[in-house]
Length: 257
Image 1: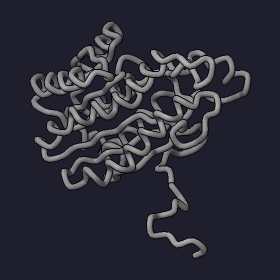
Image 2: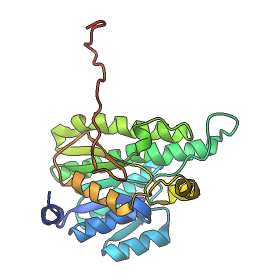
Image 3: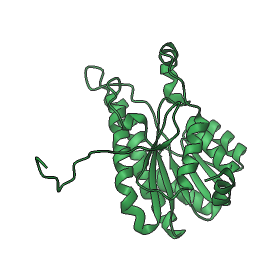
Image 4: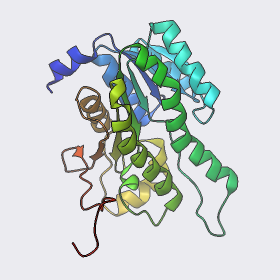
């Protein structure tokens, strides 16, 4: 879809963006607003969130996505302020900060699972009635390349991002009868706060950091497309596209065939 067509498709649509105060959320909020959408920015960072809301001409709502009631309140706020909701970019997330061995920390584990997985589940649950009331809509969740590959250095982050991938693949067909499309975006090392502790390592290894705008452009491609249940990778040096899950055995597979 061309930029002009994307703008036409998003004109006057109402979009919720969680984790919208910085990084991928901020870039996507700006891109959605530039395409004509009304944007509701949600984040725990009130100062950053309000700044993005001002830049987009939209609205800000403080929200802890790991809290179900906070997600419901966010959607209620968007419906009251904007008249409804058409799109949701469930993007809020944090790094894990611990492993499963001696460095395991229950509070850090709960925080990461709460933001990275519960935030997607709770956000989806909260926004579905509003999308159905509009006759359908689109949800994009931020997963990661860590949801498509092994990550020995942070297995718990890989675990919650693999869960988001599985959710997207499953909810795509499950929500199709409601005309709600559900997809995931799976960036590599992209410009965001999560990579701050890794910047020196990435630079030393010559790994490029993906601009947040490249991820935002992919999100807009997803929400203005017609696919569902897809997991789009975004990696430096490659055009974004849905990941192809090959050679997965089905329940009817017969050994030796």
